[in-house]
Image 1 (cartoon, rainbow, N blue to C red):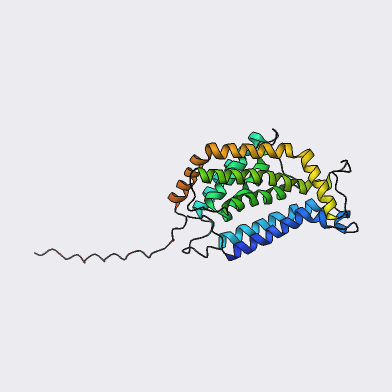
Image 2: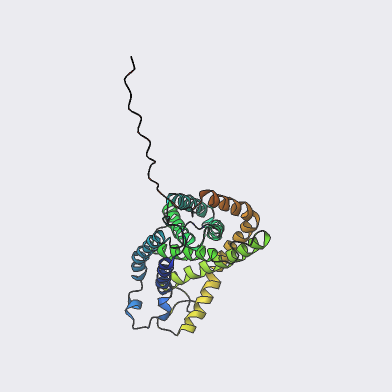
Length: 289
């Protein structure tokens, strides 16, 4: 299967680096001690990562664009890849406001999962991050949470591109696989985003609030209680909608994405040939008298 942005060794290394930084960004409050300077400046931490993560994501895009290591010498993000990326990111950004604020219903997840499945993990990671950024600009949702949303959605699309059977699995079995992944990723997305905001929310009951410096198991129990009492009512409808859309609209959308990928021929090698030298016209002769 053609991959508009295939993953080379440098791309994989950069993605792993950004993911490691992202894990630290999400999870550092659980591991920081009471005396840690991070705990004392917890309100500054989101702004720090808001500056850091977009820079790292820009490095990821640059590396993916550079690393057509397995192909025929074509650029990583050529004009056709950029055009497809822009169309899908715009579609994802337009879908998100349709359900935002309504019991967690977000049809955006359905498109992101199917796009990552067809177009691969590298393209999926870039698409998920860019779609979330574009939707934030569209809805006015720019804030310290945005880099975390971009990274989490990039992980969702990347995981869809890594699902097995990309070249052979088709039909009902593929739809069930994507529906199951979409449901799980929708719930995990909400859980991960809870981890980003939970340490900074004041006024919570002691049984669900974050306690800096407490043992990790104790804080995890509080975090689980926090998720159950606050966000599960949003995460489950998001997962249910993703399942319904995958099972009902998955076949035509997958077919359209695969047809677009075939016709675009992303992996066709680009070759520049010198112009063929034309023969010089014969010198005109004077008319014979």
